[in-house]
Image (cartoon, rainbow, N blue to C red):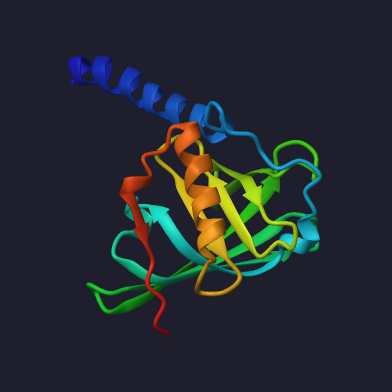
Length: 180
């Protein structure tokens, strides 16, 4: 039993330390720059996910949307929804986003299960806030968003070129279908 405690306690403390470290280490990928002069009120509303680098929380999902709204305390409510076409069911999750620094810099941290936070960095957006390129903490997370279910080819190419220059493998992007 004492041998188990000698191993279990340090391992548990190490895991707890990693969780705490990761929850406070919200990053932006090297070479990426968040949009300056950001206008959060224009960003609020419904966005359609056009493309993403796949990860476990959105695996096998189509019809993915995000709705951003202002909370009374100044944070941003994030309502994500998508259809898992394998399990044939809708999935929804609600989270919270906060600005890392100033509201005029599009660097946010988002959490769907506190105390764990992840980077949400708008690294390109058109002047009318209709299309956005969003980077996560690392080169594993990237999203292309639109106010509609489609995106003009010129914006698509602009976002892909920017992502490639930063180091993203855009060949791995999943192009999300919207049929609902």
